[in-house]
Image (cartoon, rainbow over the protein chains, first blue to last red):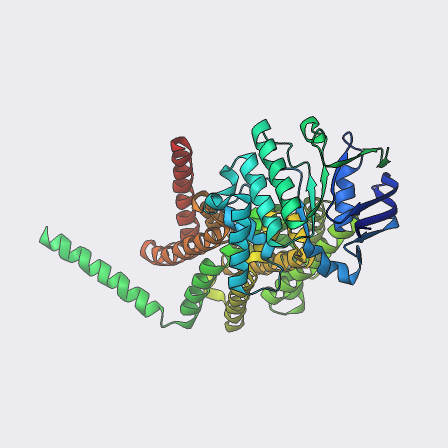
Length: 218
Length: 288
């Protein structure tokens, strides 16, 4: 039997008096690919943020990679979780493609040369080496997502959380991204949880699909 | 013609001698060193203000420093140190209230801005602080700095340079996106508080140096100009420092040449550079 990468029991999250997640339970096995689908406001993004420990749970427990989210050991372990967020980051200040990827290594206890190696390998794996000197603000949605993925790969993650990564992509870039994710899952055994309501993404084979509605799985 | 050329040369030589002579006066030398340090390194805090949208916070800090100066004058302690202390307390309170209440930093800053200026007026009135002295902090003076003021400016310069260079990738992560910084394992809440502290101290020190009304010329304008030309975050920090250094050094010597206050000269030069930067940005956008 495969070990669970994520295990959630009776999770409740409130924001400003409104219950966003209501007693949600779920498990994701290591190496699995899961899509969480559902309408806007169903609580999909909040679920990802709760898994990362960005939002506090009112009740319930979350175990990720064997650590309780929010515990002291989780603050170390969360480096093994890559996060690609929903909107392409609004950046009106100068930042280069390489600097975006470099963020993935910034909290890792590694030497300079090892960090450099990781950045180069991650950019090569995602096929975005040519973007390293380019200004982030001037890149297309697909190019920005590639940099986000490379940033996550630098962390050598075991779990990848993706919040609507295809929302700003054209159909071709969407296909490219999905095939890249499949390849990363197969080659590196990365567990993936993706939030999406993109019909094209939901038709992808080999992804488990769970539907959320009003803060719980339907 | 030759006479005029000789005359011009003599005037220039005289001006050079005046500057060299002026440096033999400790207040002027201290002011020059402080202005150069501030020009070179305080724009680093300007990058923080620009990126984290701390413009309202900056006003709050000016008001908190004014309150500190008023209290300092009332209690006969150094107004700069008192202003610095009040800025640090204001920063800690604002960061705490914003985190606990979930309110935007701008709202919390506005509340503290009104509170501190109200208290400042009350202190000035009740303690009989001469308004001229209290409001002196609004225009500052580079030539009235004490040795302690200069040491504080130098220590701050070293601290902010070390902070940005040693923690560059983490600082850059927080400036890029706080959620992504957190997800990458950065202690972004702690780092953001440190950044706010740096902004607070820079505002308090610059108020004494060139005054509240003109501090943006060293703090913000170099960072804004650098944002037009830089292509990376490293370049952004570096260019902001170079532009700040240029404005402060050229402003100092221009103030001697034209016999105007140094703060005004620095501000006018920075404003001219900003204008040039805007034209450059417009042209480069048209080209692309």
